[in-house]
Image (cartoon, rainbow over all chains, first blue to last red; front, side, top):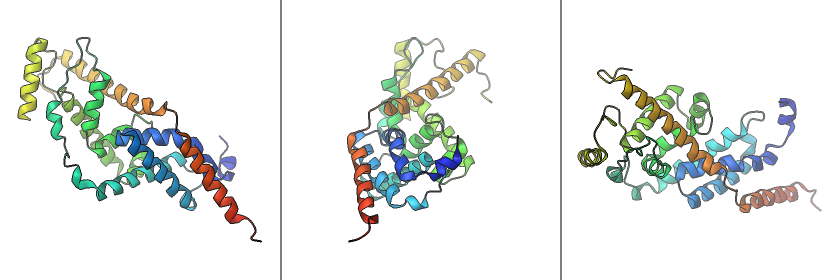
Length: 191
Length: 60
């Protein structure tokens, strides 16, 4: 790593190297390729226009992710009304047990992930999945590190719940698959 | 951990579930990461660069 060289480069010339992770973050966050691409486009334009605000030598990818998520949330605030499903009304239909081999199917996982709130998807992708530290994620999200940790923990719980895997539900406790499914549905209907 | 009364077996399963959730989260991001970036973004950057070059050229 040669920071002297890195800081000499025009960060605008480095943007192209970050398109892939930026788009991956956008897709993970919006769970919609069209929205993700619009978001990436807007992020590029904003980043280009405000490149002077980028502190050379700091993490360009983190800076771009920050612009992207801020852009996403401000566009959501403008069009919030139509999405009246904060904690997932259709979550009730989601109660998925792992396959008999104990592994959850990825498609089932995606359905549960999609039903999370944007904030929960964001924190789970930033911390862990995309390899940022809690501190880096906190800086990007504009909150304290402790908030990131508690939010991530709530998000994981929520995800487990959507997957029908909430702690203490006694999964695998000897109940056969059919009974388990009925219980799962009953629990979902009550919840 | 304070899940009283849970058998060690269940704790093991909880850990396993946690690990699977982490693994799947990575997969969400990774599966998006391997996707080819549409050319329009590289073109956009090129266009921005060209515009910038014109701007900084010495006016005639």
